[in-house]
Length: 152
Image 1 (cartoon, rainbow, N blue to C red):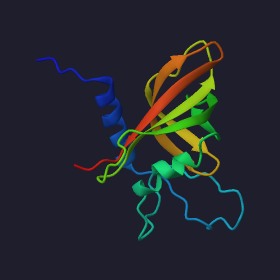
Image 2 (image 1 turned 135 degrees about the horizontal axis):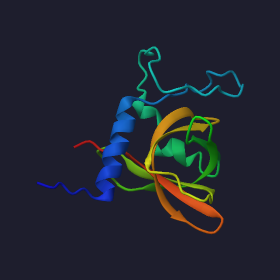
Image 3 (image 1 turned 180 degrees about the horizontal axis):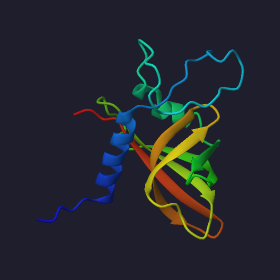
Image 4 (image 1 turned 90 degrees about the horizontal axis):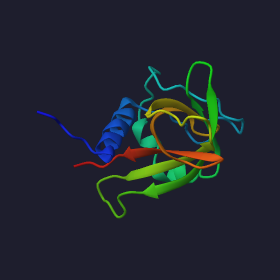
């Protein structure tokens, strides 16, 4: 028996795994006005009363549109990307949110491979995202992440 998955199903499943593993968060004002030090997703001590997964909302990413992110593609390679859009994929949903993040990078000989990458942002910190290459132009390449936080 052959199981066929659509690209969207793979994106949704991969994103759900990344989001469910847990993501870093910042508490407003906790840095005392200093530039925040990025945090790493991983076995950090649990902070009571804080929902780590709920930190990365569509609104939080919308506030970062137009800013620079860094994508760690290998131990020695890191590329710059700009968040160019956040698209609501479930408008009006009362069961959570589902949205896509579109990143623009400089065109390279080869696009990013589809997979989970460590992404770093000055305000949001360091976290994992499942990225999929979308298209490539002469000078720019695009990749997308889908965050699905809808509940059945």
